[in-house]
Amino acid sequence: MVGFDEQLGRDLDEIRDAGLWRELREIESAQSARIKFGGREFINFSSNDYLGLAAHPALGRAVREAVEQFGVGSGASRLICGSLQSHHELESALAKWQGTEAALVFSTGFAAAQGVLTSLLGLDDVVILDKKAHASMIDAAKLSGATLRVFRHNDLENLEKLLQWAADRGGRVLVASESVFSMDGDHAPLAGIVELKERYGAWLMLDEAHAVGLYGPLGQGLAAADGLGERIEIRMGTLGKAVGAASGFICGSRQLVDLLVNKARSFIFSTAPSPAVSAAARAGVELIQSAEGEKLRQQLWQRVGKLRRGVGSLGWETPAEPSAILPLIVGGEAKAVATMERLSEAGFFIPAIRYPTVPRNEARLRVTLSASHSVEDIQQLVNALGQAVTR
Image (cartoon, rainbow, N blue to C red; front, side, top):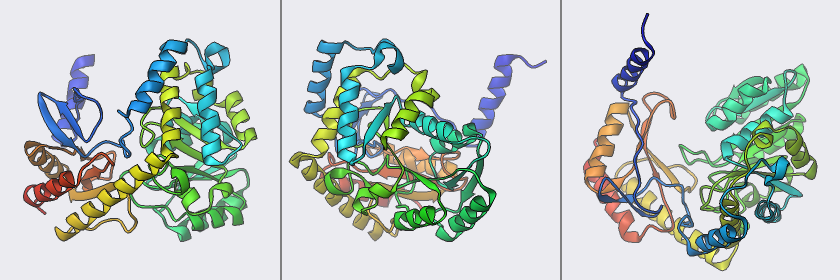
């Protein structure tokens, strides 16, 4: 009989042999356009801190004030005694920002997706996912017990066929998609998806994790930018990317939030988020809507435009729509890792994204931009890519 550690060792050898080995890096600095680890400084093109708020003084002040008033931990789940003032203030700010009746904060975006899909759907229902939907929605759909169907990425014709099938079958039908996709930076055809789900009586859950803070009036997200927010039943987002803090949230009707409070196991059975984190998130939400937030958005889009032009001059294809996410697909896993290492030697931190995060042989450098990057940072990266990437 093979021993426990021996069997795990064999499993780890398979991961190494496939070029899929991962390890944690201890970052020795705050999140910023520059980070330190292993005693070196790198220009950081890997963070989702799109507006540079993770180390913003306003969020730091909010944390200090919250710790003085509420301490560090929440002490219990929200339904016991952990539902603190800072949580309620954050949810009120989120609902007002998103123009919805209510909002609910979960410990993470992953937990939010799990809470929604397992609360709304069951064995008699259908969930239809975009092929490139985030892992949190895929796992939540499986846990719900609903029949799972997947439509080709951004393919409205394929989506309609599945909606027709689901309508004939009966039961609740929910479509789930990201608005800005996390690995490719492309946009969902929201107007078409909304029209189809309404035609067939389905619901839509839209993950705006990589859109809130960046698109639309006051950074409300891509749905608001397209004028579709009021036609989407479930709007999901994260507070750990452009907002600069942590946790996930759901915005929608009061009935939706009340149902989640009563049924979402990932909410009911989790200790409430730290009051300091919720206070920081509220400060981030308010800052995003301010004149400073608008200036940061404009600065980010200027940096995005410069990088898109730069990599385009090197022969790379860029997504049709502007995004703070720019995938540079190199193909094989080993090639992606080698390119990552060459860029690391040049002082850039851009991890290789490999299977199972993306399909096999679609490994890539996932470049993410922040308003904190300088024009010089962008130009240095373009120069380094020209030397480091062999295509």
